[in-house]
Length: 259
Image 1 (cartoon, rainbow, N blue to C red):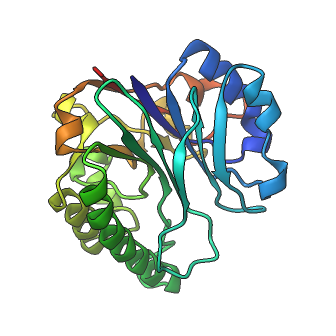
Image 2 (spheres, helix red, strand yellow; image 1 turned 180 degrees about the vertical axis):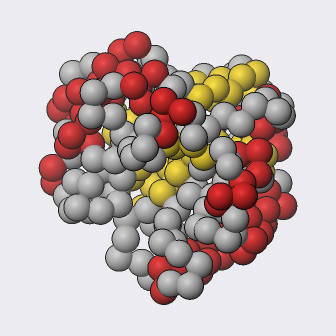
């Protein structure tokens, strides 16, 4: 079973790239972020034409998340329960596997803009709500995976130039502490589990030839519960879509589960 995550930075613009990627990489569940589409404009027909189902939470212009899957997801949850938020950032569903049900969550964590901004305060509140919800989810779903754009580079290994980024968004102590609280729930960073020394960047700025210079950050992650981690045989970053014409500034992360 393969799970993947990709912040596509507008599904309207990059639907052909998503379809092409799925045909070349027929994962079981693809978590998308930054759809930037209204709920009623989601291209379900185009995905069904290549054999996929989907559940999604759309939002015009900003945000939006989806789960694109070979089989239909059940027990669908949109947004974090008991957290009032007009922004569409979370969608979860349950999928069958040979080892029983797997709970898969697509998450688009807030950017935060800057450590001295109101958006940063919102980011910290959002992470606290996510932590509380995941604590409950893990009790109900031992096999749980939450994939997405976390907008956090957990350590300096995940940053191309730690000195340059010091004190900035994505690497601040509070953001990294919020990430660690998710880990402390019993979640595991699949990529770092498989590749302890590989930077594995997943995002590169559009400016200054960042992708060509590999001046990136690792901010897209796949977190697996302890029971699910025992089945994880590989996790990789697929850089090829970042070289497309009109690419997203993020690229997919793929997890292989031997289920």
